[in-house]
Image (cartoon, rainbow, N blue to C red; front, side, top):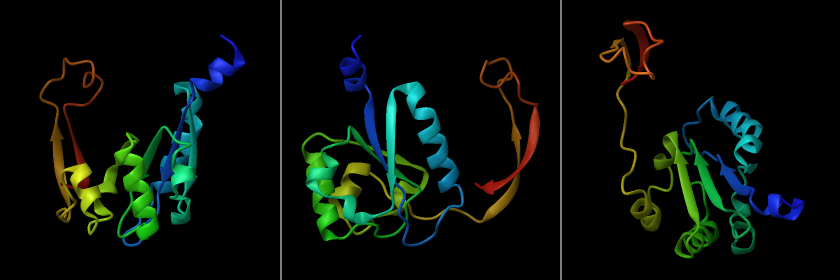
Length: 151
């Protein structure tokens, strides 16, 4: 494969992790992991929290937009218009974790997602029981363990 062909097959994805409300501490770790592991999957990631990146010209450079743990109204009206146009023209979107907790007042975005974050319960203690220990995805787990999480 020529170098040009190899470069053409690398996906380019924009990670957008802006927040206007709650901010997850895991965002920098997630960005670092995606950027580090991207080449193994033929993906180049760019990262920003700058809403001015949401322009028609800039977004068309990306194979996908990845919203990562966003919250609140993270785009201005111009950014929303560019984002909607990108999607209308067949652009790809990935939402991770609390991506549904942003742009709650933006009709096209809520329609694209099909749902919106409402709330989660308080952090609580629970016991996780493995009910299928013979499955390859659970065979290495203990039969039960305690967790503290938003369940």
